[in-house]
Length: 176
Image (cartoon, rainbow, N blue to C red):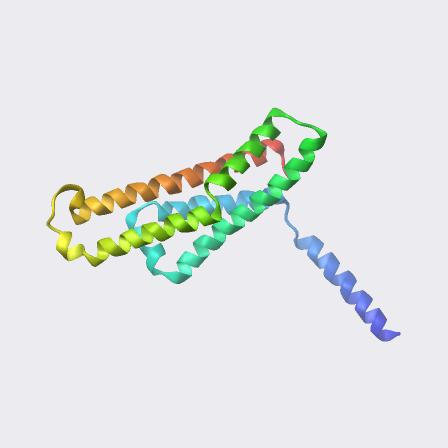
């Protein structure tokens, strides 16, 4: 009789513990997108991307952060699709369209592929740094850095804009 009591006590304790620590979807999205906003400032220049490309731990943290964003956006998308079956509003439809666009254009696969290509480009630039240092224009070290930095900044800014738009929708819809 005692083992059953202990098991029931543990199950009830653990289930009540999980309820106390559970955050709302809106709060999680708000926190993670705010973290992305801060981190994206570090990624949108050449030096930040160089750190990303050369520091495995940092690279995995950034990828994990974007993975979490996509995960919670997918959870939100499913919740909103269910809600749209009962009542459609302009804000709800716009939110669905924005999340679907983000998931399609900036998927994890596309993000990792883009970063892989940029890291390959950086590796090539750094490998030939001495040879191209004195070249002129876009063929010079500084020119190649500038071109790569511009591509990176543009991509990171697009992701950040999409993430911020979704966060604003969450606020407007009062997602809990």
